[in-house]
Amino acid sequence: MPTHPTALIADDEPLLRTALAHQLQHAWPELEVVAQARHGREAIHHFEAHHPDICFLDVHMPGLSGIDAAHHIGRRAHLVFVTAYDHYAVQAFAEGVLDYLVKPVEPARLAETVARLKDRLQAAQPAANTEALLQQLATHLQRGTAAAPLRWIRAQVGQNLRLIAVDDIDYLRSDAKYTLVAWRDDAGLTGEALIGTALKDLLAQLDSAHFAQVHRSVVVNLRAISHVTRGDNETASIHLKGRHETLPVSRSYLHLFRTM
View 1 (spheres, helix red, strand yellow):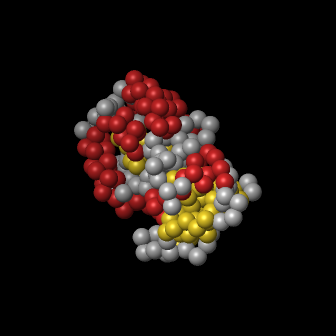
View 2 (tube, helix red, strand yellow; view 1 turned 90 degrees about the horizontal axis):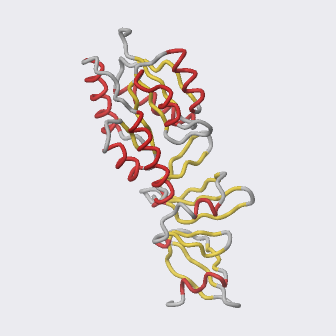
View 3 (cartoon, rainbow, N blue to C red; view 1 turned 120 degrees about the horizontal axis):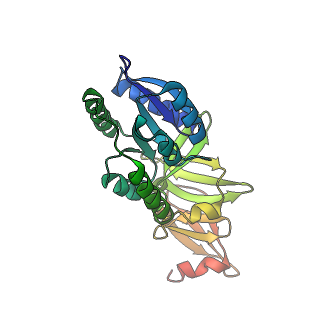
């Protein structure tokens, strides 16, 4: 093994790859990130070229996923999975010996993972026999991704990639080929961004207890509603807390506000 441990980072979001590399630089200065990959196929290529000690693999990547790449790598490296789906993924990881990080990666959690990896490298402990665990994880995630509500939305805001907590979203509106995401931060400041995911695809992943479709092009966070005003022809307008704009309610969805 080289003097300094080495690592590979695989994530389809370049800004998230860079962010994790910077976090690792602070949490583990001796660790050398020898390669970064955009998807599973590239991760496999870089692994074979550099043979890193540790691989940080995003679970969901286009083409070959992080789990697919892990099947190829096997016991030749210590694996750390990075996922945005915490509930079902963590349940799967907790049942095995696989390491995981939940996006956005918290420094305290990263420090715990780094400590475990250092111990394993120091003890020359081989990576776990992962084949059965990976199969179990893939089954958990396939079932859990469909059932677990979405928690974060990635949006490009200028030159920055912003991770928007779903709880902070006031509403979503279909805009041609894009979806407008309107949110507010902890300080109450509002923001907007366009993303490429269709509104109907987002709606299927949102918690129906908090989000409702009120128009064919609008989904609203029920917790963001101030009041609803009835209009003509069996329509209505939604007024939002701390926002000047109103949202339309079409006749098909007016039943949601019958008690007003």
